[in-house]
Length: 182
Image 1 (cartoon, rainbow, N blue to C red):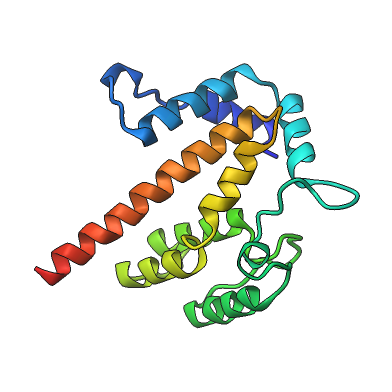
Image 2 (cartoon, rainbow, N blue to C red; image 1 turned 90 degrees about the vertical axis):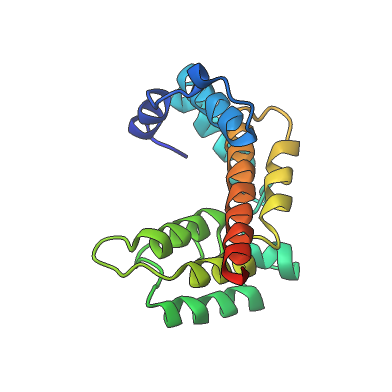
C-alpha cells in the first residue's frame, strides 16, 4: 500500500480539471488524485489488505502467471525472467514480489522507457514487444477483478487509471507502427 508521502504527493498532484477534457485518462487521473486527497493511509491500507493480502487466497492476485496459466510461478514467469535477463534487468534482491506482479511489470516498463539509474533506454520496439507480451494479454482482466471487489474505492481508481493508461500506451504503439509502415 502507498505510504503517507506517496499519498500526499498524489493528493497534491497537478489537476487538469481546468482544461475540461473528457479523455478517459484525464478523468481517471482526476478521480485518483481526488480519492487520494479524501482517504487516509489507514483506509487505503485496509483496502490493500482486503484485496491483496490473505491467510488463504487473496481476493486478487495481480500476477501474470495466474491470469495466463492458471497458477502462480508458472511458465509465463519463467519466460519473463529470461526476457528480463536478456534486457539486462533483474529483480531487486530482497523483494518479496515475483517479477510477474502487475506493479513490477509497470516498473519494468518505466525502466525500458527511461533507463532508470544509469541504465540504458530501450528501443520503442523493445518496449512494445514487452508490453504486448507481458502486460496486454492479461492486465485488463486483473484490473476488472480489482474493480469488481465491493468496498474498494482507492484501488478502483488506481485500476481505472491503469486501464486508461494502458489503452493510451497500446494506441501509441499502434500509431508508431502506422508511422513506421508509411
